[in-house]
Image (tube, rainbow, N blue to C red; front, top):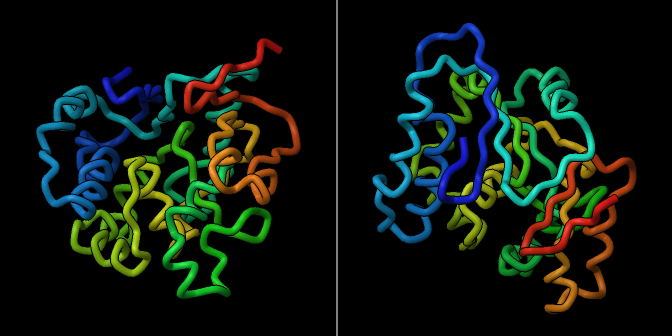
Length: 231
């Protein structure tokens, strides 16, 4: 299933209660924008929900459209088996200093914070180009569902002086700063981002600390219209 906001969803249908995933997946797109602008219309995204409400879904892999696979997608689905008990989402880190920039005010006020710092010890944020969504775990997680409440999102946005522009990625990054246990970290090879925009826009001195990705590449991500290599 592919939608207008340039995401694809690959589903694994399994035995599960009949459930509309309105409250566990795409609602994040609404609440994070509500926290920023207060004027987003639920109808802007609700057209997608009808695809999900008629299916019994247990797990979803959500993909951007600007990807090139070098490994079998079955291997990506196998990553679900590595989720810790509390994790509800599998996602790779952001590979540019996007959130070093976005959290600038919080970082200035909290100079010892790891927020926005590069790996391996920092919290660089997430990139939502490749995501594994365990819907059963999302439904059961009291914490995750509490974090979907607009008022809770607004409090976090105020705490971190956060005004993002990347939708679900911003939402997961923000809650991940406080609740890492909800996320299973995919290796960078499952979402090898190629965009280098921030290298030329003020962060050249630290760019490679974020951009480096050791190990095999399973998926290339040609974000910001970057060409994907043929090899």
